Image 1: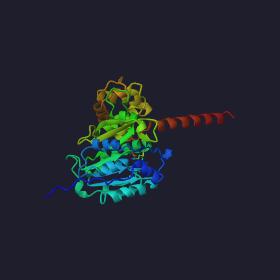
Image 2: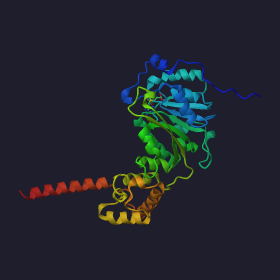
Image 3: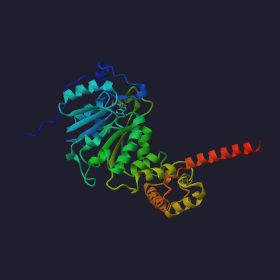
Image 4: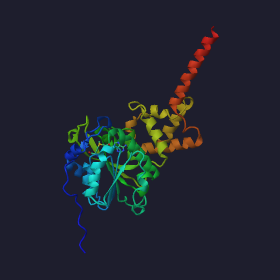
Amino acid sequence: MAASARFRLPPLPTIREIIKLFRLQAAKQLSQNFLLDLRLTDKIVRKAGDLTGAHVYEVGPGPGGITRSILNANIAELLVVEKDTRFIPGLQMLCDAAPGKLRIVHGDVLTFKIEKAFPESVKRLWEDDPPKVHIIGNLPFSVSTPLIIKWLENIALKNGPFAYGRSQMTLTFQKEVAERLVATTGSKQRSRLSIMAQYLCTVKHLFTIPGQAFVPKPEVDVGVVHFTPLIQPKIQQPFKMVEKVVKNAFQFRRKYCYRGLGMLFPEAQRLESTGRLLQLADIDPTLRPTQLSVLHFKSLCDIYRMMCDEDPQLFAYNFREELRQKKRKTVEKEEEEEEESY
Ligand code: SAM
């Protein structure tokens, strides 16, 4: 029997014509920047990996440039989630042109439950090769950064899009954010995001799209980043704990790392506990946060976990709260003294 023919979309109006036809002027306040060049959208989809037979989740399809490239990639099905109703009729046109391939959801990617959307049969064990589930999206930068943090936590918990296994993601970010995501130990761009992404995923900055490729043109260039969740995270402590250690370490980026890490501990025990943390983790206190490797963070998180087990109140400690209380006490004391002097 002959193999089934590869699906191609029939000739359609261009994305520019769709924008005109449905009056889809980009809403500046929503940071909508569209990709009209289908060679570029094809490149994003090609670089996402082999999508043959895949279930694809596209976030923020807008006028549908990337959507078209995905539909032409021999996929099993595509589910798109778009927040702005104005785009739905244009997407409906693609749906009619690709019968049975495209499902459109008017919704918010930050709350949409993708874990129920694809058939159970696509699920793979975490230790297996990644499932045929891909996430692709060119979202506003204000959404893509909180979303990747949320999805990194989903990876740690193996839920959300990762209930299917190690689903791969190809997403766009402001170029500087893309550089932070892949920044290596000691580099200028090394930041919280580098550690959080790299302890859970293999992260690749695939290529950069110059700002002028978008309509309207954003102020910045755009990086396309690919994530494959690791079978074994490089740090095996709860996500929130890793997040806390990493956040504190980078609190004072330019100072020695002991300064930021010290903020994990109440002031009264700060010096002693920070010394103990760094000594047991075998880390030079005069390294800068940017010089700490993921392995350093693994040691820090393991020792911090041990210290939290010894002192069950430690994890809830927040140095900003201690500062606030201290300030409040000083004000109250001053008020009392004023009253007494009457
Ligand atoms: N993907 C299209 C492209 O490349 O031309 C559009 C890109 S535009 C930067 C971002 C799209 O994401 C817009 O269509 C916008 O309405 C949509 N969007 C923004 N926030 C969203 C959210 N929270 N959930 C779903 N879609 C969202």
